[in-house]
Image 1 (cartoon, rainbow, N blue to C red):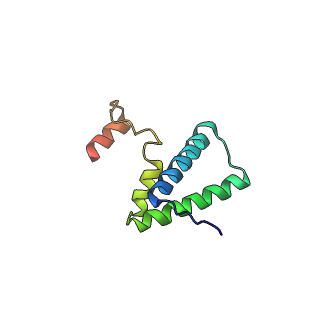
Image 2 (image 1 turned 90 degrees about the vertical axis):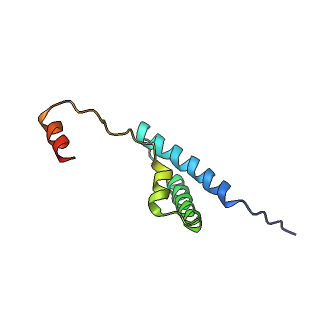
Image 3 (image 1 turned 135 degrees about the horizontal axis):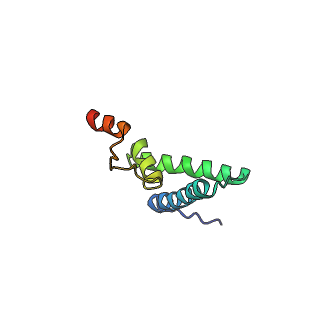
Length: 92
């Protein structure tokens, strides 16, 4: 007789999040590309991540922030005084 084990969706989301973020970091930092099987795995993980996230009533934006938040450096906040920065200061 086969035994069915059910995993906690929160654990699955956490696992997918770690793996997807790790791959994204490697791809951005090292210009690494995925193999065909790696792409298929990434596609299924992302699809399952979004499915579980939506069942928790997360918006797509919230899920994208979970995936990629902090992955990119924040834009500089200091203004150097050049004409371009001066124009930006006047608009905001």
